[in-house]
Length: 351
Image (cartoon, rainbow, N blue to C red; front, top):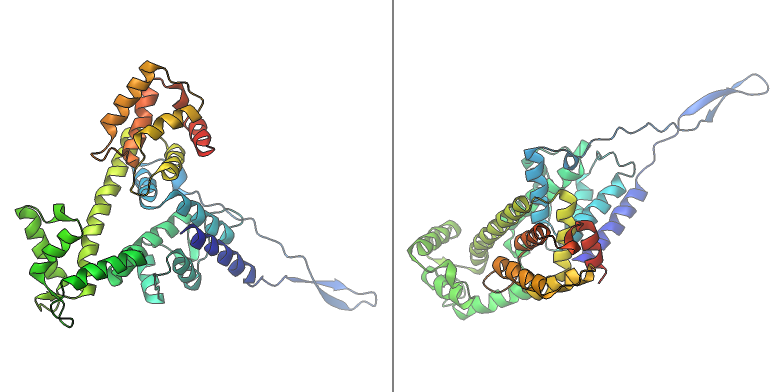
């Protein structure tokens, strides 16, 4: 993903350099023999008027917006998006003209499985009320979020890596009774268990929800689910999990009471130290504090263990929202290593 976004920056730079430069105005001048000769004059560059970023304003709406961005995107994605936008906005006025062709290249490189068209792009732009002639950075992020949401509905394959699709196909094929018609809807429960998603179908309410969603994706009412319909069904549950995760992150941001820059720095630390399974191992928090120059005595180690254990999930990992709360708890307990969030994060990232 990082390599793809770096290619995006190169593409944006190339597209910017190919943009046509406006013609310099010509100014009339008198020649030695009295004739008027028009020679090119120096083009006067208008002074850009900077559009104040809504991320720099303070209001409940803005707070909700930047919290949503931080919850939805990874830190490296936000940095790369900002770098790509800056190539279109060298004067940093936060208001540029964005062409659909540029937006299409932007999204294709961000995710190679995306297939944007002029219609789907215009739909995403309209969905968030953005203006292609006066696009702000925040508007671009909203357009990307709207496009991703719509693209998932059209093409649920873009939700999964190729290795994940291969696994899903192999599990699905094990339950195929008829390669043409697909699996019977009652066998979906067995597929769900084979994928380790038992908790989503256990209990009466969960099974009612599953039946309703099967009806939603079985649009031809055939009583069977083909692989594409199965991916749509899985998408609904994946998005449920994402919504719960995003809501939890937003709650963590609000409860921790860190400002925008502090949350983004802590998100960078979390992404850097998180495991493949997800979350930060509790023992790593002690290493972070030591990297920040703090020497932990026995009482401090005991307090740290208590704080981390209280905030950890049932797998013993710290999710991002819990990591924020741990740092806040340590600040409240007067742990010197985390008093200055910027210093703490920079020291940890330098480890």
